[in-house]
Image (cartoon, rainbow, N blue to C red; front, side):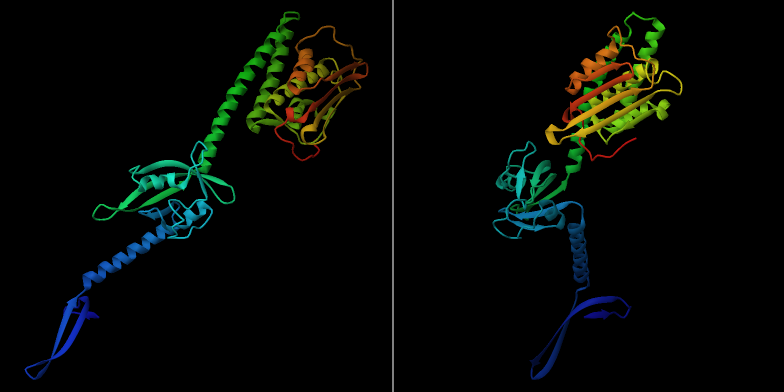
Length: 381
């Protein structure tokens, strides 16, 4: 009962009243026990348990406990979410972990009776700290988690179970894997880039033309290569065909018609294709359809044909209305690039014709050798 003292204090008391006979007289004895501290302790314990239950249920960390035999006793919503299933509490078939399957970081299968919880309860391990485990859910999806396990003991030191706190690090592992991939890709690109620069320099500075002309040629090729690298840096692992052509012909947009679907080339094909377009453009500006003011046209078309492994990438370059074409008398870097390098990198022999009415150039290559993916077709101009 609640009791208020003369001084106004609020107390919680327990009253026991007994009536009995004392030498023929009826006597009533009342005992009053002050339970205020006990009630306060019970309320504090209830509030503490409520806070713990709230943290247990709504916290971001997955938590579950097992008894001394490994049978799952309690688990929160996050644990069931990561397991992809809800185990039956207290079921002797649900031991050590509520997951469908477990795997080690190296991908090898881990039986439940060999998982970290089993190792800690059997005292093969005193504690598990930041151990990685891969959980496979019933739907086949997998998540990588970090587990931390502590033993639970009674006042006599006997093991009563263990508690496991674990959290999902799948996104972190994917980010680490992507970082490793990017570093490998960067190293690969750097090696390729240095080899291409070396080839461009050695082929451009041949000593067969005036030094000023050779320097201009070299500078133009290096600028084309720089534009390619900028496209690769901005686009990830490749660049769209339309973007490569647009960057090369920004100054001649009204005299160059480029039509074709969305196609993103892989990094190696992007590098070669950009240099190829630059060589064709340079020849058109110096000797071909773009060499005369307000006269001459370049038509560029590319397409995708077939599907799957048989799909092909076709590219056509056609110059019109320029001066009469005179076939080259020597083979320089441009010729080597347009014929041999393209054949090697694209897996197809290009066709080049120096017809009097205009230069034409064609590629018919396997799509898989050139692209990052095969996106939906949409015309680009």
